Picture (cartoon, rainbow, N blue to C red):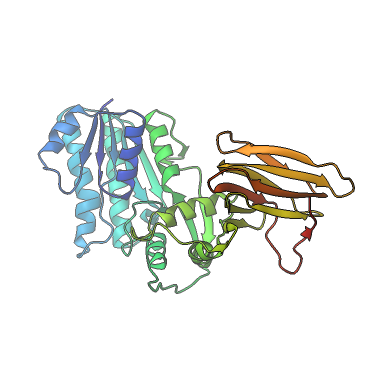
Length: 369
């Protein structure tokens, strides 16, 4: 299948082309502002499906709205008619096509042109009225509030929110691309004369801003956003894509002593915390027990032994562990336990605890194994 994508270097276009390639579509005609206009004739002659994503939404002069959103559509359709190519055409319109502003009027004109073309030629047309779309590769400080907020917050730049109560309907770019590829395969979601992306997220501007600031703080707090919330998950992925390239990494606080170190990595209120424990050769750590707190130990480098004793008995249980064999050891409640490095190198253990450490209620009681 030969696929023409206009606006291929734009936000939606870049994501679409990347995923088409992931799915082994190889004949993709990319058409954008930098493309030689004469190539459009060849592309329209050969195309089996067209994603018409090119458009204008932030022109210097309002007359450019009609030129970009209506004029190019007209040229595209006339070129198809010239070659008697009635392949399906998908167009990205906007919910603003219902509004009497220059942008909306130009988008509505493009829609109407496409519907008339369909009646004239019997070609299949798919008109999507997108609300706000967010995700990676969207241009910040242009026409996307989320892109601007993510970019600025990640760089400690100010943002402006006039009314945090404004309700926004949002599409995530991966959901948009998934729907577009479904349309390519003849499985578009329709509603009346129009098509739509079935997954829409509705929230307020204030809630979006609060989430983005919480993402920034999560590094300092060593926390992870609530990934069970679908919108939070998508917004966090978007935020990370706007990190400055010099700030992909961040430091953790290592608690170091003569035995080795202990470093908290991830802390969550509902899934506990993950830490990294490093023990020097011959060192034993632990010798304590818990009422309710429980842990999982995973030695990833070195070798050692984890010892247990039910505090009501004298029997000692031993589990020999090594980074050569990935083995998780559960630490049950009511058992005093320790871990000893039996090797000649540092032993590295990933430790998970079911709850965050609370210095006011540590639930940790010293007792030799």
